[in-house]
Length: 626
Image: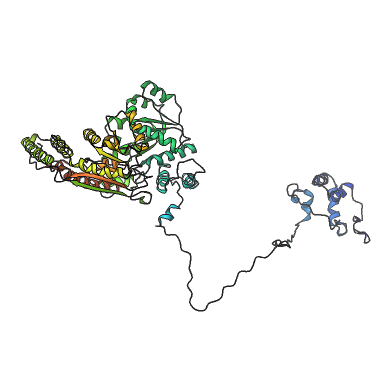
């Protein structure tokens, strides 16, 4: 090879002792495209030029030099392995060394200005105090509010892929901030925890205390599952008076979730079971019971069935409970603020729907907690006190008016004598009749109509109206409410009880809320203790007491709910030295046992009144024959 020293750009001249064949020369001249190189290699493989090429490469004077400024192109995609060429196998081992320069940060542009130097802190001799950053207190309520809430796998989720699915879900608090899903206001942290509790469970009982928003939590959980495509059909079963309330709440919390209410006409309702493809259907317990023949049809199946006021199925053998349990479903959710009203069996029978077979009928009360703790969630207002206004309860004991006292003493004395005369034919119903008679006298004198409670109530209502507030008055009978209505006529009283037609009840509540001249709502325990939202009231009066503390708590919680801006004052009337005071003591003990049950402490076998307790209300010596 010879280079022209006067012209370095001139191509090198290849000097060989023997002129190679054109095929061999083409291997060296094919310095252009990869296609040209491949053609040259292929020609060399199929000709005698391969051996000639080996001799050419072995000659030290026959190595062509590329131009120094000619770039080296490398294409791994188009290059062939040398070992695949048969003419290379005789060359022996080929070694290659590549030297690269280490990567360096690019130099800043000339116009770049260096940042100002940090001022040097003077060195202070001696001991110094340094403020170190502290971790947030886990018990700080503000820190808890900032924690992200996520759905968590249940205790029986064992497959890794199923548990991983929950870890990949976005936090719930980011879904209800107004950017992802439309909601009237962002749920409270404890409500997000309730949603996270419901979503992964096929069987769940949400047993929050009345007023904590079980309706909103369940609607949002349903909404998310429908959006994710996990469920496509749902059935919501509620008491008849609350169907309208559920419709209103669904429009508020899930405006993008279609739903329909089953019609009252049996033929139209039967058509709705099979023809309608609406994702969510609403029906009341009474209509569901009448459609038991349709429920047994194998075509009727729902991805989720939600029970509101699930204590309606606490009697295992009742017709309602049997029909509800027969509905074919994949998920079973239940809502109840009082899952145990009188006996632990109430909870067992509810779980016969929530998770059939999980809690046997003969389960001892002490084992209920271990069997149900993963499927039941209960929070009280004390648990979420930071989101609730204060509730003040006072027992106001009044002294019977003279006419009332005379009538009461005479009625009790005569009643006890008659009960003892019954001997061993006496039963609990005889005692109940006397109790009801005495309680009515505590409200109003049967002859004169005088009432110590009414006198005090009128005085209290004067203060309520003077402050521009509203109040609810409860009684277990309708007759006292009619008398109270006349006494409070100046305050615009409205009636809400069982004698009011169902279609007229919602307009009454709307008028009570909107009309500033309507300051008082008269309600019976039966119609006003379940499922109504009356948080715009500030005063609650219990004109007489109920046997069951859970019913009283439900009535009080009509006003004491999330969204209340002012304290709620609850006044419970009691007459001194009467059956009311004795019943109040029994109720307080019953309430304590109820709270112990819900707290999953050691549970007694029953929290209802036994026979000895009922007979112990009076000095009765007679007992039923065994």
